[in-house]
Amino acid sequence: MTIVSNYQNDVANYWNAERNPVNLRLGDVSGIYHHHYGIGEADRSVLDAAPEIREEAIITELHRLENAQANLLLSHLGGIRPAHRLMDAGSGRGGSSIMANAAFGCQVDGISISQSQVDFANDQAARRGVADKVRFHFKNMLDTGFETGAFQAIWNNESTMYVVLDDLFAEHSRLLARGGRYVTITGCYNDVYGLPSKAVSAINAHYVCDIHPRSAYFRAMAANRLVPASVIDLTADTIPYWELRRNAAVATGIEDTFLEAYRDGSFQYLLIAADRV
Image 1 (spheres, rainbow, N blue to C red):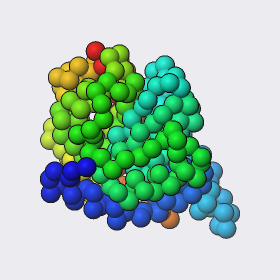
Image 2 (tube, rainbow, N blue to C red; image 1 turned 180 degrees about the vertical axis):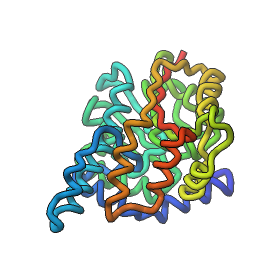
Image 3 (cartoon, rainbow, N blue to C red; image 1 turned 45 degrees about the vertical axis):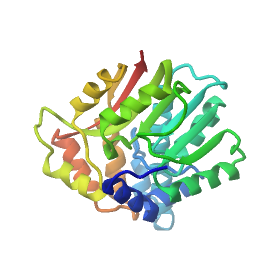
């Protein structure tokens, strides 16, 4: 696998070194480790739990919300059968891939430019006894080397902001079988607002990423034979996660910035499902 730019090297170094408790402690709840946010109504009663159990109760609830987000994404992959093959682009520590295999019984290939993440995820698959079906690879999602038309479905879960969308969707279009499904859940800045707001720029700096405008997704999809089948605005649904996380010991300090961006309309949280035609 080739890291082809200084920026990609910076991203790989960031995730190779990342040991953030907001990812690891949440994953410890069930052994499913994610690198994305949550959706749905939060059980705010955990904030009033007894001091000796309060923090663990908050962690468990945050993990429930991030699992709900992954389940929503997987529910939009279409009619997946055990014989199908799926790809998790930007697979992190592997949580969504392991959930996809559990849901559909099919082969899943996860890819990441972080060798540390790949090693962690493969270890998790082995621990769960699914390493024959769920495999993680040190690959660049813009040039995977996988065979053309090999996948029935591909997803990006909060990883599109690290790449050029035209390059990404060209590769996804090549890899998907005709009639296959692509799904992303992503944060994007609102074209109506104008250029990225101060809060969006702060998020970019925090995560070493480059958040795209909403319009860029649909333009790049149209140019690469991906036709949107479903678009869901999850902005209101993710706010409870951030409100709860702000009160957790694992908070990173970026929580108020996300809430500001969502509430002022400059930032949106979308699910986009598209068919390969």
